[in-house]
Image (cartoon, rainbow, N blue to C red; front, top):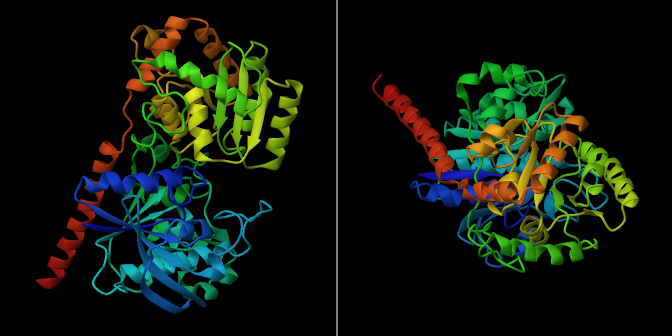
Length: 488
């Protein structure tokens, strides 16, 4: 089976969050299900720099007014189609924001062009190659199915929602520039509170919708978590599935991780503490025996980092250290830094992201804190489990499914892997931190939590099988429809 995956980011080429990890790992797991995935990705400068051997495939002279070229490439076992459009992608900053931290002014066009190019490929633009199925991810590629259906292309499409909060909402006056007819501006396709929504268009025109955890699939059917799209999602509930994300067990492996000064596994967990000294040195913090609580996350309201700033003293007054590693909202960053200023040498806030440091934090910290107000799945807590870090998480979305709370019954049964809290507010987080600190003082129970977490298995194997089943069902339905037309 040939699948075209369309995404705005993909590890190890370009990453801002979990989307890249998923689109980089899932194709490898699907290969074991006899599915060959080719991923289409924008030709950002950092991507092109890592792909010296590009094979030109096709050139577009007018792709929504842009000149662009599709190139074929391979990288670390990944099969790629790169959309090179210098006018849209050859610029400083990240995939979505510029160097000043502001959205690129033409994101509406940058990702519409990506979707349009993908739709052309789905409709047979490449000689000798056409996908059996298209898999799109989030709003950045959600218009792919809109363009496909408008062109009469009946190749099945799966749309995965990684975060419903980001919807690609723009003014309706851009419809002509998107090359889409006015009749699509209606409540059954693109119209969204007077604007157009790329994500809504994808939800209405894809054959199957998936989210990254079963709990999140249920949550987004409610007005609280539906972000204004719960009505659409309830209409399409029979085509909605939740599949928990997996992790790449080779990349995130503490026994072989090249970014750790000292490797370890569940049988040599004491070696993990040897990573603490270089970790604290890396962030300029005082050495000490108290626990190290870290957060690797976007600094946003969604991730609850304002709550962590308010509750951080719970850890610091108990002799612990805190590391916050991420970037995002400047006001939340300011609140965190203000807390850190009250505890010099005890709390560090570092804005930015790089893989080696993220691995070192997992390898040297005692606990990972994720107080998200909503969380579709979350991968950081899965990495934490793998590295003997005990997660402290809110009870929402995928966090509630992947972490077993360390209540008395779970501890007695030796199945607990971390600490959940609810309600999701500062008081709830503060109580969870106290529970974690109390348990840390009991070395035997803490070690049990670590060992149980490291025993959990969140590889892509089971999740890939579920995606493969969806793909196969869609292709079978398409074949059945084709056969019915043939014999009428």
